[in-house]
Length: 245
Image 1: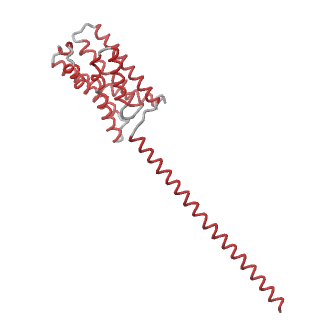
Image 2: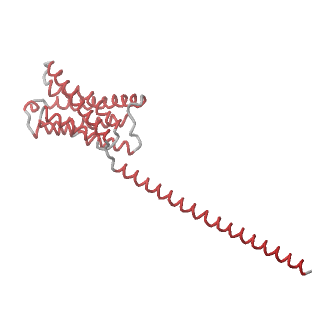
């Protein structure tokens, strides 16, 4: 009788210890698991917030990398060369006002097509302005020192229009390229021409009749818009070929 009682007591004691141990281990596992999971989620949330802040900073303050600056420099130099070559061709024709009117009018088309490549490759506010400044500096060094405003003034206007299109989600549309180049050449043929004509009083420009000047504004701006469309087509083809990204 006593031996049976002892056996039953020992059996109950062992079972109770095993049950407590199992419950303790379960509580330990259940307690640590969620804590670790919570810490991981908090870290992931902080990482996403940090990445979001960095992305906003990069969008609000676009920075030009080395490739951007190299491309802008190449296009700025290319526009200057094309513009000068067309000046020689226009002057050789012997037409009246060839250098003052004929040349800048017909040059608007290839100039705009080249400038539009900057908008397709760089896609950052200030790219047009920087390209125009490079173009203007080269012209000041190798041609007319007073022409800086004339060649540089269109850049900020083109950047403003391009910024508006990118903000509205239409940065890759043909309308963006055409409107940007239209703004560029409208500013150049009005404000830029005014700076040459009245601020510096260049004699050969003062000789241009007002009607011819008005015609120059309309035709050059129209060709600038057409050049923006040509540039858009070139950007699309180069993008499809994987050359421009």
